[in-house]
Amino acid sequence: MAEFGKELSVTTTTIPGLLVVDLPVHGDNRGWFKENWQRTKLREVGVPDLGPVQNNISFNDAVGTTRGIHAEPWDKFVSVAHGRIFGAWVDLREGPTFGAVFTTEVDASRALFIPRGVGNSYQSLEPDTVYTYLVNDHWSPEATYTFLNLRDETVAIDWPISLDDVELSDKDRGHPRLADVVPFAPRRTLVTGADGQLGQALRAVLAGREDVEFTDVGELDLLGDLSTARPWRQYDTIINAAAFTAVDDAETPEGRAACWRVNVEAVARLARVAAENNLTLVHVSSDYVFDGTQESHTEDEPFSPLGVYGQTKAAGDAIVATVPRHYVVRTSWVIGEGNNFVRTMAALAERGVDPTVVDDQRGRLTFTDDLAAGIAHLLRERPAYGTYNLSSTGLVVSWADIAKRVYELTGHDPARVTPVSTEDYYASAHGPISPRPAHSALALDKIMGAGFTPREGDEALRAYLQ
Ligand code: NDP
Image (cartoon, rainbow, N blue to C red; front, side, top):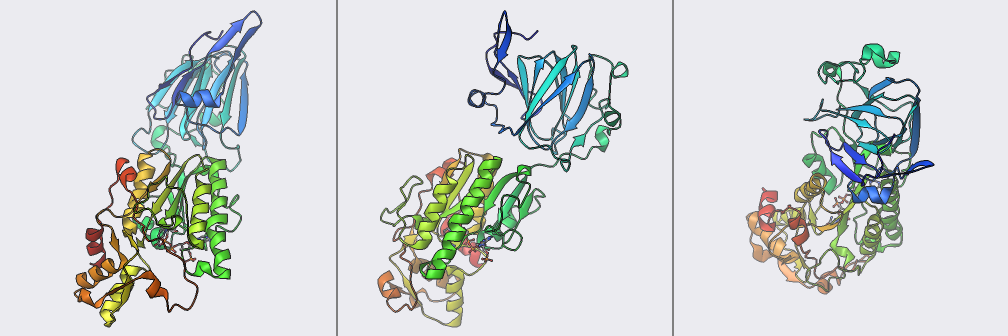
């Protein structure tokens, strides 16, 4: 008989992420009723949003039927519809809690949230026990389970009924001891556009992480069929470092279409994959989503893009904001591996060229190693989902100021750089030129409040030029 009248509550256990849920069960002369899975109420008490796609039921007629220990590649929400079980869970995930054990009895007034990779087993304590569970991926013959022997001496589960006296399947009898179990690997992270400036920095910051997969356009074209491109339920995060970034080309008829395809259509496809599979989507935005009339841009300033590139970036941001788990990292004036302003100025200085450089667009550089480290920080610390600005800290400067500083730091006379207005600079341009925001500086309080402080701009520039 289930215990009636409990309050809905959640208790943590010795296994991280394994939660015991006490469920209110209402009884009367007809029997009883419970809300077994109620998404909103369970979320409010701290149970993760499972996103179930399959419901399974197993019926155990004899007392002592024992099944397990199986760690599966999806999360489970386990409960009992009739009868009672003794449940035993063993953490089989890679990491410091590998081998941790938790046991408890479960009747219809209890449920457990079992994270992917935690081994699950139970013994029925009453006849006709109906054990039921929701999972957030479809069972498939290709799914890889990790098993542990029910008799393992290291975890030494204290089964209420001796395993010598109960029904076990031949398969369960043959599972390995803990010392021979290969730990369950974590969910994967996919990085797109991994050969771009930011992508290369992400390769360096996330180097050595076996759970991270880096893809360039040849390995994963975001304009291909994304829905079946990966077994998405085995992923946790997508970091989208791919983009169309040729700002002036985006003003040509062909460039405009290409820019919309990569920065909007591909982003919409990624957002759909992320929303459908409960993934975290990290996307990178730009100061160009603003017209630059504000001197400093907060995360919640309304979009006001001037050119095609900025319009597509704004549209991409709006789409990503609909993904329940998302970080939009908005950045400006990115400098990394590849063609960029600092490299161009250093090369001109070396070749003896005296450039004219605009002095009426003001902002801060962002070095890709800071940007990649900031993204890694957000994914590690998981502050509230949403948009975070990220650029260097320190003075807001013009492109001409930066050019002079590059000349100086590379041993050349900064007076060789002539400041010029944007209007004059582009007066003799041949192809179409994108309008650019006059003020690109991003307010950095939010990312710093989340515990990440990028390097000061001049210090980072000096390090870059070395
Ligand atoms: P890059 O142009 O260096 O890299 C973008 C990468 O995306 C390239 O490797 C490109 O591959 C790849 N890509 C393009 N189309 C596709 C596709 N269909 N499928 C898969 N990959 C594709 O950009 P950054 O690293 O400089 O920019 C990173 C992010 O920062 C972008 O979101 C950008 O909008 C944003 N940003 C950049 C700023 C800057 O100054 N650079 C300023 C503010 C924001 P390929 O080269 O083969 O086309």
